[in-house]
Image (cartoon, rainbow, N blue to C red; front, side, top):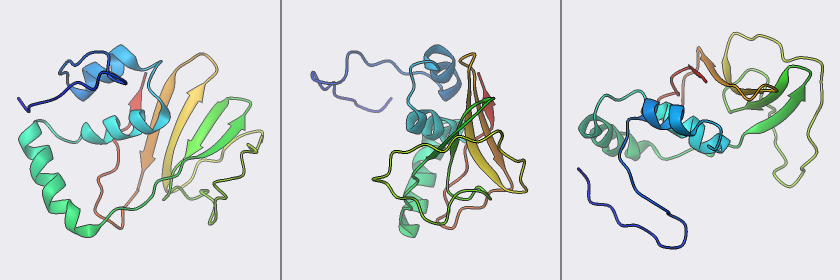
Length: 141
């Protein structure tokens, strides 16, 4: 088990769990970026494989993943780079959230849906990363 050190300012406790266990126990509290990243870690069955992947992939650099928020009558969507309808330019200083009737189904999807009932659904379809990052594993809670 890796050695960890608790930060007394932000970390209240430390506990090891699988990504699935962590998501199930904390789904309602997880901010969007953490939910997305933990869903990516679900690609690995053990920490050794994850560590090897991280070392090998690190030579490709890192892309910025800025979620683009859209509100619909069905819930809130966070679109991520690679999604067909992700904007070509996102003004990170503009906090106006578009409100539309619905989000179309696309050939390439990379999105998180937060329904009004509190459920979360991560949808990744036909996504290929340019920097060798693995996409998240589809997930619903």
